[in-house]
Image 1 (cartoon, rainbow, N blue to C red):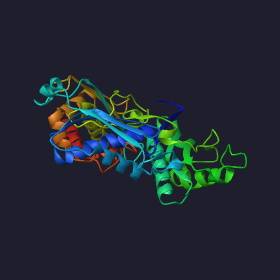
Image 2: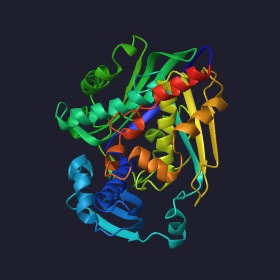
Image 3: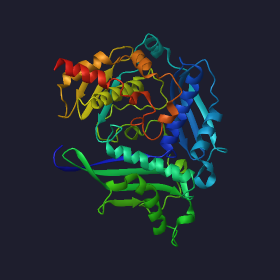
Image 4: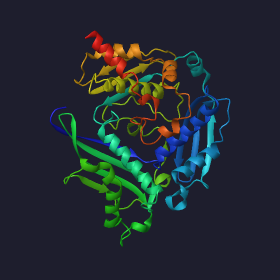
Length: 387
């Protein structure tokens, strides 16, 4: 895009009700994969005041103690006191898990995709992680809130929180942070004399302690900060909002900077291409950008249930590519195995790694295999050789 424009992305913290559900669903998946790499998992979680419901379809040879697992995840997040509206020790936990449909299994067992659908991958050169700046800053803000809370730097913070960052661009390059929005659950200790708003002192502390270290010199005298704009955020977490697995798909991916295929990730084993093929799409896009074959790369993959090879592969570099996009499609098909079995093998996905993905985004984090750029040099050399 030419000229000046603004892009906004949001993130949510580990105590947000939807993210609590994502973490529980992925903790169930990890528990299965730790003992049974052939296990099939499609786990959904629902949470509300005093209640967690875990359901879905699971086929496995191992046993998952759902009660114990749910309470462990809630405790790790910080829901251990009624003052935050939810208590891991006293909440009810219902298990409504059944077996996977044999109609699906007969197509997946032979190496086919676990469902139809479209999967989107993206990378750009705005940040060292090859991610959009707005979503990376939004994630770092909620990570910082968790750090400040757990280290008791600000001991009035609760587990629930959200962030939002608006970045100003010029001719496709980020210039500055225009707006930072923070919503931080807190105790009543920081309310003013009216009891309806947090004090100005608390607002300054939150801005200086949380936003300052993250935004840094990307902020300027015109940057706007909005903290708990309703006045207060005492009632939070599952007490104030129901949560469900898979409702934060934009937070999980690219912050709304590009399109989304529509499929959620958490609670799904890697035979589900909603998850694994989206990871591979990111892997391909990131390697293309890391090879400097484009400054931006968007890739769409599509699958049919029971079939192994993708139905289609499309790449768009938004006019930043050094080679024609169809050439990049051919490189992707040649150097990356895009079948479900090939993706699982290449990205080493049959490991209990998934609970870590369930908060702070699935992309832009070097700990995950799909973030490796091991094929960038191969792609670059092939393009140079054919030039």
